[in-house]
Length: 302
Image 1 (cartoon, rainbow, N blue to C red):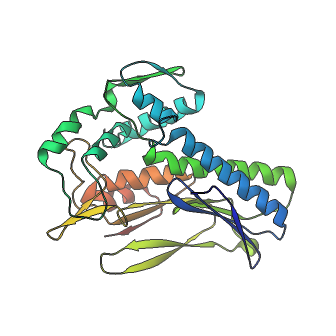
Image 2 (image 1 turned 120 degrees about the vertical axis):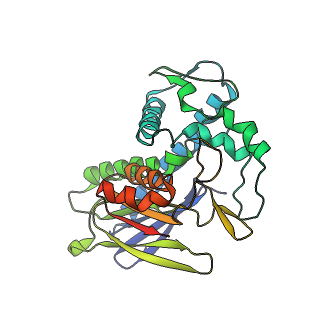
């Protein structure tokens, strides 16, 4: 798909749209300065594409692709990659091993295309031994994992990109104007705002309801911070009336049992919101209880 940014005029500002990380993306800017709006939109898109190119598991030339291709040997890494791996380590520890970026190899057995194609026990058993963050080692200069293992930054990449893009937006606004300029960045449903809209109005955000029988939207208000949503609206399998979520238990290789269909979490940063939403899903039927214990704003759709 062509990497282009489109600008749409709306009441009170502009909406810049583009496609990145397999998702429709948009930047809403409440300003009448089209030049500035285009600058911000293009910079945000460029950052999204940079992160996609650098960490996509689908590109053999990406950091992720190179680390996977050279599994079994020590590979040099830069500071950004080191910090992302550190965050992945924190996710692993906080989840008691359930959040594991080496689990992407299980996609070779599971294909969540809304069909009824459930893998066999033998197919899952073939790849499960290659899952295990405890077999990874890294420092600021290098990364090593066992031969044939893979990593996948997909569980944190999009939310990370939202936060990095918002940092760029804040820097541009500071350089260009002293006035308050409300901005919302939305990468496929994971989003952040830099503050309320004019007159202290909240942004109104639609969250998709992953119903099996109908599609509806839940409206969420946000003035500060970020929102991330995890669920199986578009990634699941269905066989004999049983719905299989794309969220896998890395200890068994099978989908987590009885998770909510969707979880939306609000947090100061998008990567924090995404982590909490995913950690909740990994707890299956105990997701709501887990989120209540965190004392954070959240919405759960069972």
